[in-house]
Length: 340
Ligand code: PHE
Image 1 (cartoon, protein in one colour):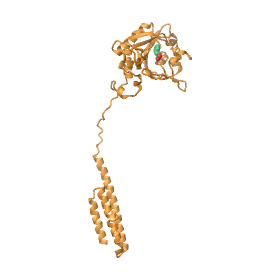
Image 2 (cartoon, helix red, strand yellow):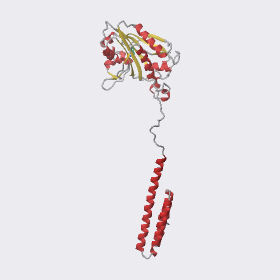
Image 3 (tube, protein in one colour):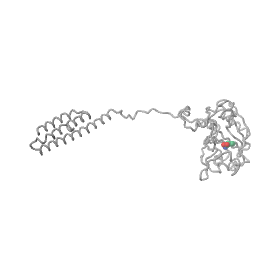
Image 4 (cartoon, helix red, strand yellow):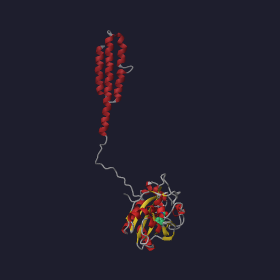
C-alpha cells in the first residue's frame, strides 16, 4: 500500500502541474478526494492492510497533501487571473484630455452685460447690493412708510428676524446715495423676490437693473434720453415704446415705460397679458424725500431713477415666451445661448 500511495502522490503532482484552470483543478479534486476517488478507494482497502495504523496515517497524509496542494494551486490561479486583468486594462494616461463640455451663459447674464456696457459707456458705475435687506432700505427710505397702501404692490417674503428679501433693486438707492453723495451715476442689477402667483409673465424670483443719475439740472428729458439710448443699443433696432404716468412713492413724477410685445408683435398673447404691451422700465424723477433721506441737498441736486425689468428684457430680446423657463434649469432651453 505504501508503494501505491507514493505512486498516487507522484501522479497527482504531475497532473497538478498540468491543471491550468479552475475546472481542471476541480476534476483533480474529485479524482482524488471525491466519494469514488483514490483516497476513498484506499480507505476501503484499509482493512486488508497488514499494518492498519501506519497505512491509515499514510492515506491521511496523502489526503492532506492533495487538499493543501489543490488549495494552493487554486490561489495561484486566482492571483494569475487578477494579474492578467490588470495587465490587459487600459493604462491611465495623465496627458489625455477628457472631452470638454461647455456650458452656456444664462440669457439674463447676457442681457445684464449688454445693458451694463451701454451704461458704462455713458459714465455710470456698476454696484452690487444685498438680497436680504431691512424694512428701512426696501420701503421707508423710499418714502413708503409702514402701513402705506403702496406696500400692497409688493407682497414680500419676511424672515423671522424682521429682515426681508428685497422686492426691488430700489432697495439699494439709499445705500448708494450715502456711499457716493451727489453727483452720481450708478446702475445696480440684482435679484428680486415677490410673493407672486406665477404665470407666463410673472415669477417670484426675477432680475431688475436699477439706475440712478443725480446731478444739477437733471430733468425728465435726461431720463427719456438715457432710456431711449439704452433700448436702441440693446435691441439694435427701433422698438415701439410708450410712456404713461405711473405711481411709485419714491418718484415724482413717475412713469411706466412699456415696450410693444416682441413675442406677438403687439397683438396680445399670454406673455404680455394680452395687452400687446409689456411694462419694462418704470422710472421717474427721484422724490425729494428720498434724496433727503440719502443725504442729498435737494436745493442743488435732482435726479432720475429707473427700474429696468431685466428678466422681461431678456424675454423680449430673445423671444422667450414663458418667464418660468429662466429658472427652470432646463438645459435644452438654456444651452441655446452663447456658450462659455
Ligand atoms: N422699484 C420699482 C418696482 O420694482 C420700479 C421703479 C424703480 C420705479 C425706479 C421708479 C423708479 O416696481
